[in-house]
Amino acid sequence: MIESCNCNMLCPCWYGVEDLMIFDNDTCDSPFLFLIEEGNSDGTDLSGCKIAMSSIFPGPTLFDGNGTSRVYIDENTTADQQRELEEIFKGKKGGPMEIIGGLISEWLPTKITAIEVQENGDTLTATIGDFGTIKSQLLKNEEGQQMTMKDVGFTVALQFEDHIGQLAPSGSKWTDPDLPHQFETQSGVQGFAQWNGG
Image 1 (cartoon, rainbow, N blue to C red):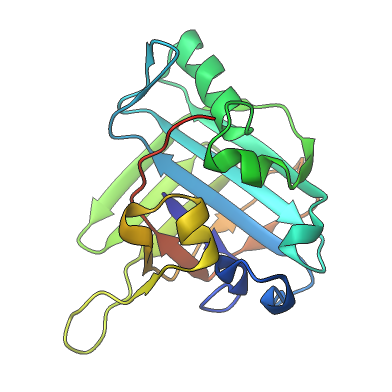
Image 2: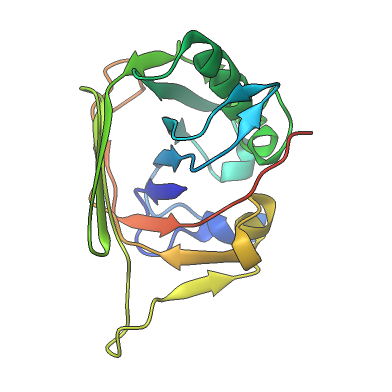
């Protein structure tokens, strides 16, 4: 999972503590990218699928919900995969996305579009149709060690491996005309997760 948002590094929502969820800007604007290595849902193989989400939360905290969101599914998926992915990522199948889905009050119609991903060393770049781009770069210290966070609220809730999130500043732009506004991001986290439904 690759997350980015318009907060400065690091987005305080990751801690999952309402009193600390003070947006750096007036709203929380955040795209996510999910690259499914392997998995299935109700007998439908989802291995290799790519899916993105983009959400805008008016605040004052993430837990106030009232978000507007859209799911973007790669055009190379089958109709069965699209159906299962949409239900999973809207939180209808339980699991971690039920938490995020509970914060969304308006789901824009899902878009089927090209999702192209390139990885070059520590940098991942993705283009999601004409809707937006995500650029995520792993953050390392002077000794070349990956900077991480562990056991914070959302690394636990999203079931990250060992509850570790890898810090990854972003340079993303989102221009979906149906969202409340366009935005750019600079904060970001990457993580590996193994999910089960509800």
